[in-house]
Image 1 (cartoon, one colour):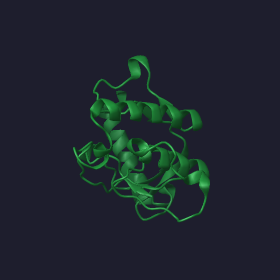
Image 2 (cartoon, rainbow, N blue to C red):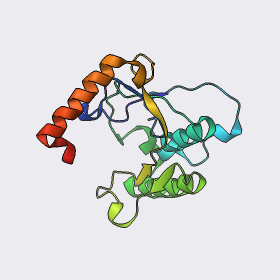
Image 3 (spheres, rainbow, N blue to C red):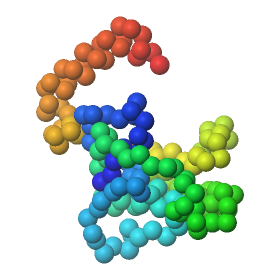
Length: 169
């Protein structure tokens, strides 16, 4: 399990527990302890959360991500993992190679951004999780379809956004 990968309020979803393939960040996560070699990280520190996310989803077909909770962190802070590298260029090289290796091992779960899809900033990692997995759960753990008030409020919100043209994005 993990928290929402972004602390941006626009990305938080107060009603959802995601069960799809996706990032379980290293800042706060949990797992069932299993002595299973297929879950062990092999590609290194700068991408350990990407690798752990892929290994867990590949093994279990689900990762729980509590989309209503997040953590504020300093992405690529000067201490922490950065202490393992002589500089930003060395870390970026290690990240790029690890992402290539993880995507090669888990091609159905992770794709490398190439060409025009590459992120423009040097700090961003160039990958994308493939969107596969089960529909989200409501925040109380029930299937979304079992929560009538949630379905009613979501339907009216969708109708309202369609009327305002917001659904045309």
